Amino acid sequence: LGESLRGTLDSLRGKSRIDEEDVDEVVTEIQRSLLQADVDVGLVQDLSEAIRSRSLDEEPPAGTSARDHVLRIVYEELVDLVGDSMELPLEERTIVLAGLQGSGKTTTAAKMAWWFSTKGLRPAVIQTDTFRPGAYDQAEQMAERAEVDFYGDPDGDDPVQIARDGLEATADAEVQIVDTAGRHALEDDLIEELEAIDRAVDPDDTILVLDAAIGQAASDQAEEFDRAVADGVDGVTITKLDGTAKGGGALAAVDQTDAEIAFLGTGEGVKDVERFEPSGFVSRLLGMGDLEQLAERVERAMVETGEDDEEWDPEDLMEGEFTLKDMRKQMEAMNQMGPLDQVMDMIPGLGGGIMDQLPDDAMDVTEDRMRSFEVIMDSMTEDELEHPQSVGAERVERIARGSGTDPETVRELLQQHQMMDRTLDQFQGMGDGDLGRMMDQ
Ligand code: GDP
Ligand code: MG
Image 1: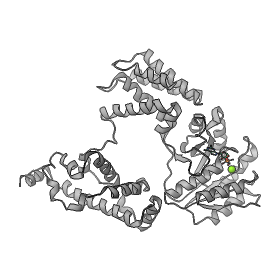
Image 2: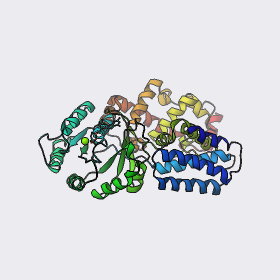
Image 3: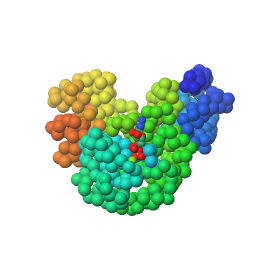
Image 4: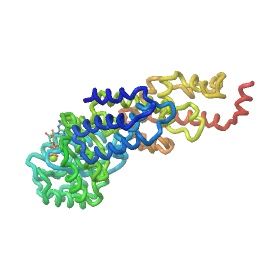
């Protein structure tokens, strides 16, 4: 199957114009893969239409082969189909999990709690399932394995009261995850219970947990759950992706509720969880091998056409605000290009050893420090990366915990950034003329 998609795409190699027949062939292959992955028929049809019309209507950018043009469109439309990853700011929040019995809610609650703990936040799991025998013990054990706070009432029979008590009992936690009961099928009492818990908890996010094998039932199910909660379903987590099911059915739920996918479950353990990432999921849907190759080719095509805005250009350093993101890109670029003073030499007007005039340690980041800096930046929020000057003592502590480093190293990173920022400011202040004069000396 993967082979035939690749074969079809390869047959476009060298063609500069694409005809309807070529496009139909590609579309047929993609349809076959997606339907096999349980993607809703209507969604597959819409996607096919989009690929077909864009491939024929849009002019390939100059220098792009017909194949790369179609690849690019296929890839963009697929990523568009699966949607963005649900945003989960690393801040205090309350999350309710909903879904049918056996979909993986209790497991997901512990997994998400574990994930938030790796980001330096203190999570708690609140178990409100009084319906399923053994639910309390299962949740308690999983929370223990995830090493997170836990609240439940093994003798309670009022889920709403347990939810209220649980929020109070775990008030010290920054992320409170409320696990709910499921039923074998959509029943009125399940929906009523969820409605009541939703009213009592008033969560920031409601996440619908779906088994990867859900297939075409996803849309109706999602609609019911979406209606039950006041603010609608915000996110979806797809579980059991370690099995044979590819989870394509869940896309109908995403479409139905305007939600975004948050996490993927890939095993029974508390650490078997990943954040959803569109291109990786697309690869999974179509069969790993060929999509990886496809993505690679698309990337190459994008770099060639200069449309990859992630590409780092040393000259960017000379414009705008220097954020931690810039610093990170620059560190990554250094890995590929060599030390920063050499990189700076590539900037027109900055060559000629001008870097020698800077304080020696201004640009000095050893490889070891760079590695710990990268880990630290992974534990920072977008906002912190863009405005490092706003990171106060409390956040330094959190970031240190989340990255498994220490506050000292986090402060070093912030100082390093400040130093580079100041250094670059000096350069930005200079016009070309000044630079020229400096270099003439
Ligand atoms: P709940 O009824 O919605 O709370 O579902 P549970 O969390 O109890 O999960 C139901 C079953 O599915 C349990 O046996 C879990 O171990 C299993 N399970 C949950 N998530 C995954 C997963 O991602 N992969 C695998 N293989 N099993 C899972
Ligand atoms: Mg459960």
